[in-house]
Image (tube, rainbow, N blue to C red; front, side, top):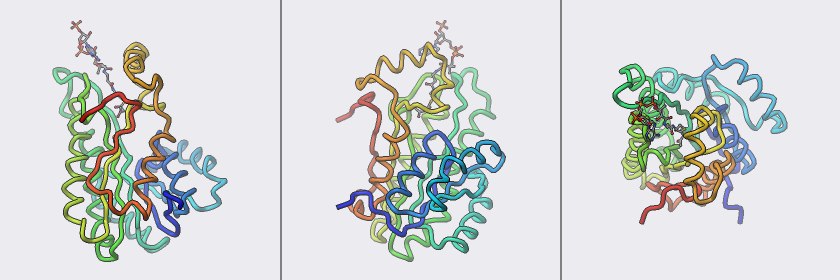
Length: 253
Ligand code: CAA
């Protein structure tokens, strides 16, 4: 049995051209889904590079612009995608930013910018997805949370709050749609080999890696595999769960 079967499903991946997003798109496409990577159009060079990176998928992965922090931009995106590709069956919310600073130095702008993308973005996308999924009796929503939403991190009150919020949101929505064939789960990556983590100072990064039992940063593929697992048709009995993928960095019981 192919545990990652998503054949003929339409998948939307926010942050689709980002550090984790591109690999998530590839994994879903390999599992048979028609994937639309959505991200800010303003990242023109990155969009062009992305098109090259996924060219071998021969149209199974395409790009659509969206600003996840803007509700009407998300609403328009769903209207466009449904017209061009059909109903959205799988939604992966991977769009996220950092605005690291200790709380005594954090500006209100750093707080609000982060919340608008990392938490409002999840609401804006799910709010537009969930009605159609419920009516059709099928949906898979996977929200990317973070190990730092579970442990907290120095310099990340905003990020940790948003990521913990993402999982609270996922559990609440999971209950609302559980009888409709729609599952809602979180994946909480640990520190991965992405530009976001590369932006942390080398000294702090080395301390972090030293604390990872597996002894290395995660790869985007480590995360994408977990997302594809939860997005599969066969994963219908897993809902409201948080799947930590962090090399053992944080263990709970
Ligand atoms: N742990 C403990 N103490 C720390 C610290 C840390 N990580 N960072 C700074 N400090 C201490 C300093 O040693 C200093 O102590 P003294 O006052 O005794 O000298 C004091 O705190 C300085 O405080 P500041 O407010 O001035 O902090 P700063 O401006 O020097 O550093 C920071 C703030 C840049 C945010 C830094 O703490 C940092 O880089 N933290 C890590 C952020 C991080 O891990 N981000 C993850 C990004 S990737 C991601 O988020 C993906 C994911 O999901 C995992």
